[in-house]
Amino acid sequence: MRIAPLTVLLAIGLTACSGGTPPAAAPAAPASQGEAVSRVGDVSVRANAMQTSALSPTVASQYGISRADNTVMLLVAVRQGPEAQEVALPARITATATDLRGRRQTIEMRELRSGDLLDYIGTAEATPPDTLRFDVTVVRENGATSTMQFTRDFYPR
Image (cartoon, rainbow, N blue to C red; front, top):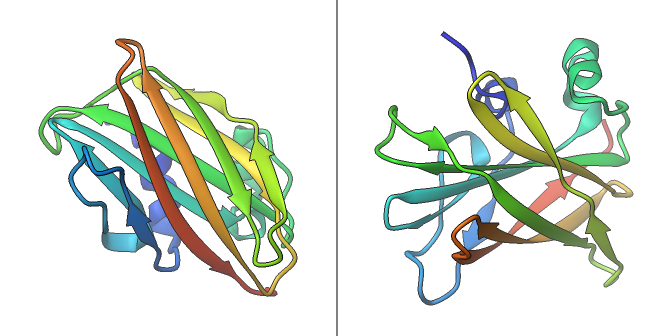
């Protein structure tokens, strides 16, 4: 049994967040372990952000990112189907992070494959203590678009 990268990160223990979706989608609700979830029909988008210093050296190496208190990793997963039977969907993900001072960063997202699973990761900078608002846009292969917004607080470790 393969464990999805998102599942591995959630097992590390993350802080709470809030989520939002466009009017055409069902409202996003905070899910267990602090991920933001948006559902449209049988498609779900799950997003989470954490300081890379919370990753183990092994996981950070596998993801190809450096561990630091001021580096935040955004992880997005697009899935279709009933829970526990979901399949990964390819998509184009664009994301930004905006801090409390209004400084906006574009987050370059890249694919992260693990067996049959496909997730997307990117990093942004934060100067803890800080709050970042993440705006995520997902465009699936069929052209369907959904958006998600959530915030996350980051503290010195």
